[in-house]
Image (cartoon, rainbow, N blue to C red; front, side):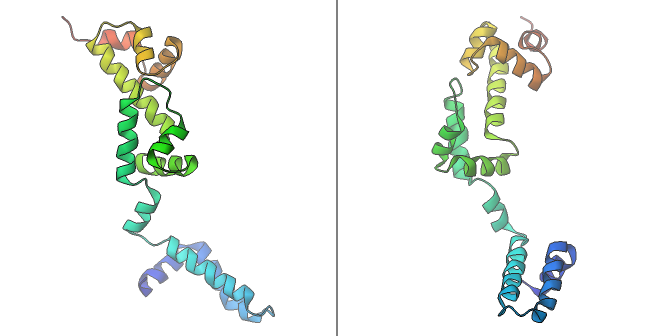
Length: 171
């Protein structure tokens, strides 16, 4: 890490400044240097964690191949229950790690992503077919029409029936 970047980080980061200040006073302690060593390690860790660049983004986000695998799986199995554990298994990660990385990559929780995809699929079916709302609800993975209607209205702003009447092309 270049020195100018280190000094910039120190000037902007109050935690790093406090660690550096503590390091300046650490020589006064009579603890065999353990406190000073701990402060140095904490300062180095802080500086490394504040490094800008590609590696930081890659560590925060889900790898693209894993994300593609999960999103394709969601599309293929949208009509059935998709628990977090199953999506994490498809990505080859633990549940909590997958959920955090997925959110970093997409800006939403895995469950929210699945719900949005279900609503998008339902909107397509509402416009293209004459299927009943109950059939569409089941087809896109909702357990009941009532739950489908509640979620649809929350996400879209209209009930499915109202949305269909507004958006369906006239024949």
